[in-house]
Structures are given as C-alpha cells and as structure tokens.
View 1: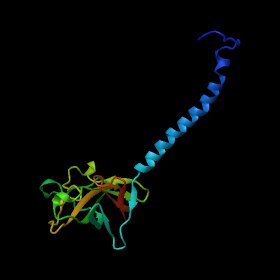
View 2: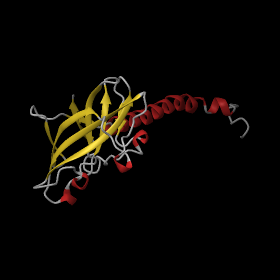
View 3: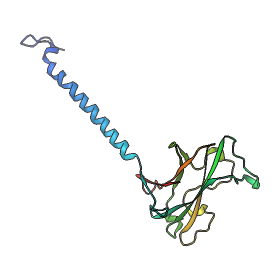
View 4: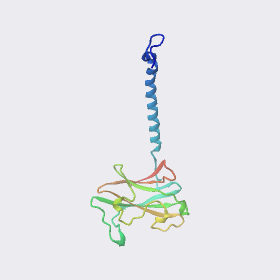
Length: 187
C-alpha cells in the first residue's frame, strides 16, 4: 500500500468505484455458475419413454414388454430348499419379454427397477435375497429361462420392498446405449 496520491486521496478513496463495481460482478458470476449447474443437473435427469398402447416399447434396438409383475412366493435357496423372505418384506418378480438382435452379444445390457406409488425406487438383486437363487435381470439372453430363439427371450428380475408397498411401475434403463431416457411401464 502506498500513501496518499497527488490529490491527497488514500487507497479506499482511489479504489471506491472499483469496489462498487466488484459486488455486482461477483453476484453475476455466482448466478452464472449456479445456472450452469442447474442446467447440467436438468440435462442429467433421464426422460421417460412410455410403451405403445399394446404395452411394447421399442427402445435401444430391442422390443421390451412386461410379461409378469407378481409377488415372488416360490423362491429357493441351494439344494431346492425354500427361501423365506423376512417378515416385514415382500419379494417381487418381474419377467420381461425381450426381442432384439439374433446375436446375443448385440443385445444391450439393461438395469431393471420397480417404483412404488410414493416414487421410491427398488433395484434388482437386493441384499435381502443374496442367499436365494435368483438370476440377474439384465436383458441378456444368457440368463433367460426361455431359450433365445430368433432374438426372443425373457429376463427375470427380483426385488424386495417393505410389506404393504404398492408397485406403480417397472423401469428399464439401457445406460450403455442411452443415458438420457428410460422406459417406464405403468402397472
């Protein structure tokens, strides 16, 4: 810091207009940074793709349909022993019919989840079912209970929710193909 200038003004008086201009510039900078973060967040939120009237969705190079959404009461553990779900939980099974390329390597990987009426999401393969024999629901034909013939197969996913929860929808997300959208099958 220097002393007074030739007019006898100190540092504060010499720089008052710069300090006054600094405050609005700082506010504009913070607003612009916040807007770009908001825009980025909104772009990152996937959009919903709904199936056609017949319940089939054409998406990510495959045709997908929910064949079954039921409580899974017949789960097994090793040695075909029955698996008992904890008393305060309900196990669910979702079966999807998938029709895609005849080459199994060309069928995209998918993530399946279920949504309750409150908007909560439940993922496939929960830890509560870790000792039950359940396939990984991933839209690939290698886990299909139905042999993949001409590109048609099924994929099965299992979920656990608290008892009494109503399921509103099944979601299928093909993140490796399209991260901006997902298919929602309303119940």
